[in-house]
Length: 319
Ligand SMILES: NC(=O)C1=CN([C@@H]2O[C@H](COP(=O)(O)OP(=O)(O)OC[C@H]3O[C@@H](n4cnc5c(N)ncnc54)[C@H](O)[C@@H]3O)[C@@H](O)[C@H]2O)C=CC1
Ligand SMILES: NCC(=O)COP(=O)(O)O
Image 1: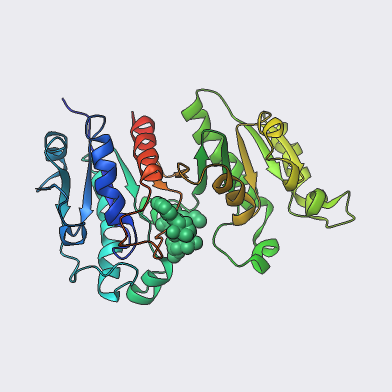
Image 2: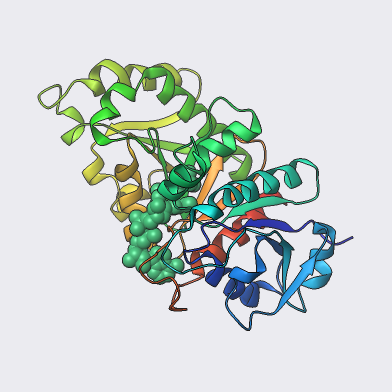
């Protein structure tokens, strides 16, 4: 019996998602099977499309073209310009992808990039991103964002919030849940518990209280308690010196305090093939690490490498 296909969501039609999906199909058609949930009108002219009525048809269709579970998004696509008419359909494709995974019709979900502001404006989307929406659909109170490439894995503890709100949002409970979910999910993936490096919040990890006290008052006591339970934890480490190659060799994943502390190193190291993974969902979700790239949408120049890596990782994790 053919392996279950991966559900790939449309993402923002005005972005590069419709352009990288056919490129990923061309690269992967002999390696794995997936199907796009989206509007076939949004795909570039000349894309070989096979419309399917059910995910079970995707493996057999891969050799002929990109399998598409066709949905009418209400309007054609204008590259670089989000259309509010699309917004509810973009959200609906994510919900449908999750439902198909939960029904045992798809092995995993891989999401094309969404434009968060366009979904807020067009559909009143109440979530900061996929991560939180997927957690909601999965019925989980808390899930974790991880970005991974061959050189590094990073987890931001706080995600899409303004920088000024980070210190208030960083609670011992939030950090503890983040570390516990990261440890459990990576142990299942790696076959052994991960070595987790934890960043400080402040310059020089607070320099013994001279530059901030979150490390002394919150992070270090929590890490000490979790070490007592058997977690392998380094830190709190100064964030500026934990990402060079010898430092990275000492851990399997870096838990960071806020979005850019985590994402700048990985996107600098490997923007082309980094993958965004949601941990703690109970099913597999991956995504390219990049966004909608409105500035190059419509030019056919978008690099599909990160989507290809995301689909490969979804297959490997779901196996
Ligand atoms: N998983 C998701 O749904 C994600 C969504 N976003 C959203 O995307 C939107 C735009 O975000 P930005 O910060 O501008 O980041 P972006 O990743 O869309 O673009 C940053 C730069 O990288 C380039 N780039 C991105 N992907 C590329 C590709 N495949 N090939 C070649 N060049 C590429 C763009 O042209 C641009 O110059 C925002 O609404 C953001 O929230 C951002 C990251 C992930
Ligand atoms: N910066 C990462 C990003 O925006 C992806 O977020 P999500 O949509 O996967 O939650």
